[in-house]
Image (cartoon, rainbow, N blue to C red; front, side):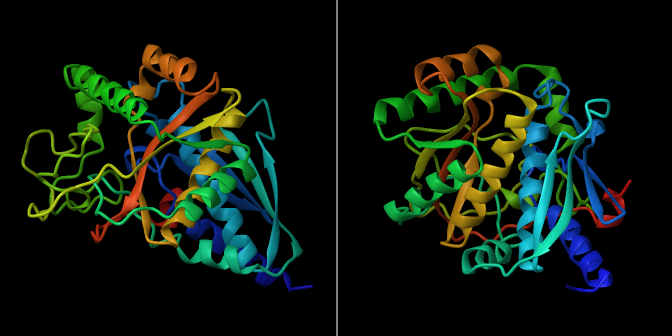
Length: 326
């Protein structure tokens, strides 16, 4: 067996990796504790999107992504993680506990996933022309299934147009709501900002080429002209549109959706494929219900994403571990 000092080091490495997980608007809505050889993952409710995510669904998905990241890192460090989801009903903000269990030897795929944790980036525009290989899509579907969720690729052009239209409609409504706008402003970073959370102005194009059909992008610049200079000489493709769903809509399934999401993203990133997210329609009850009943066979949509190839090098910022510890 490894010495206790090495086991502690593995847990500390898992904590450092967890902060690189994706989160809605890069809110990083998590906090951690490390005591007695156990990591506690908690929801940082002060970072909840009170308007667009009042139930905390997107917050728990974000924390689920951080949980998968910790488990992957522990396996790379030589330990099988022991995870307990929602361990204490009297402490609802405690989402999971993680321990370093028996020694294990990480397989090649786990090492590949671990190598993408800090390199993975969220894309916020159209994609380049290379197509996503069908074999990769099949492996992403299996990755979601392994975590208790379902990834469905939307093939029919008419269905893609419906999802795009719902995204545009939700974006249009939210843009007219002062509460949504103020919430977006809170998590939008102006150029040169030293903040280590929120969406940097360098992480999206100032003027993106439209896709067909058009999937509305969040206006993180709130009409200030922020964003990086994008190449306007070519064309942008929509990429592969996919829905991540779960059979139910409980807090445990939200966490599972986050684990599945990060598994998908890391495996895709290892093959040069990025994801763009469109959660606007899922933040409006009636639109989410329409998607559930009409396009998701009754399952609950947890994420709408587009997958594709991009050659952009965007900035990613995270808070230091010391800011995340209880």
